[in-house]
Length: 378
Image (cartoon, rainbow, N blue to C red; front, top):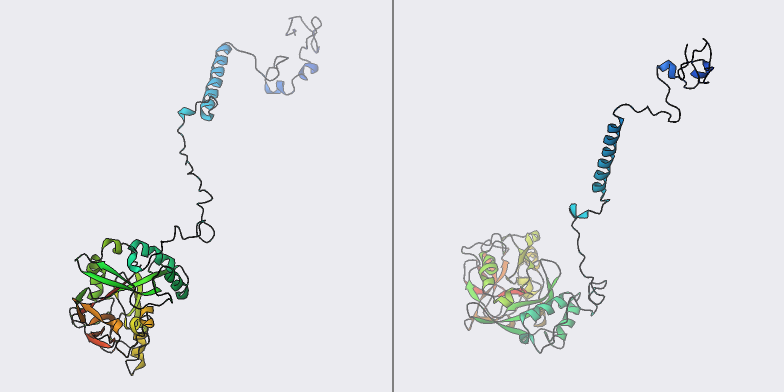
């Protein structure tokens, strides 16, 4: 056999070439690359273990490999913005924070501002109801409604001269209103923190017209079926009636919840349910307090469930048994019978009304024309 390095003839079985000393295939040579002979592989050149020898065209392969590396680097660079090219990426929308609220503007724990009022300055105190604008009265009404109970509400009303110095109502707490039909009529305060706003909370001031604004039937036919809720009078007041109010008043009227027998002929107190109204007629109980017109107490119970007496009528001693001057209303300068919203629970065709003499115990057919004397709240 011959030496693979120098070509010298070497005796069979020799491990090394006798001329150059290179291994020539004996046991020592096989030990150089374990497993290589068995796999039929040539041993790698010494000094670069595991890397094959360059072949023809290797320079081209190297160039391609280098180019691939450059491409990878460029792609990674753009993807991760290594090169600072932020302009090629769409910017994410960022909310710009508004200016912080100053310490003086921040509300405290009870919702009041640092000045201690409910979101604004207190209204200026004036001499009487007539001196205030409707906007001012609405602001005062909010303050009264937030007072807590009727006693506290009256204290606020006293501060603004909306009642007597003793906290009473006597019918002189009046403001004139010119309707859109050019009729001028008085309205008078009847209570403080009495009614529940439909939107929540107490309506601070309740007014009632001092005279009738129209004459009309409760219904075109003699029926009280559906009570106040289904009556044509209610539809009129919350539609055409509201349209009669001047804009400065109309915009501050607060819808409130009113309790009425909304069945008609009944002995069942559960017939008394709630409606939400902006303009409404008072009930018999809101005028008179306790009612005992019927020998059957179930009928009285239905009427007594329709609310409770307003302060004006308590303070002026209105009751269900006697005429009272505070209940005398005029229409076109003459005393008039005027409707309350209470159906007669004993009959299917009648409602209650107040006499021209101020007696609250009258009743009549639903199609009769009577005075319309609404109430409203701020």
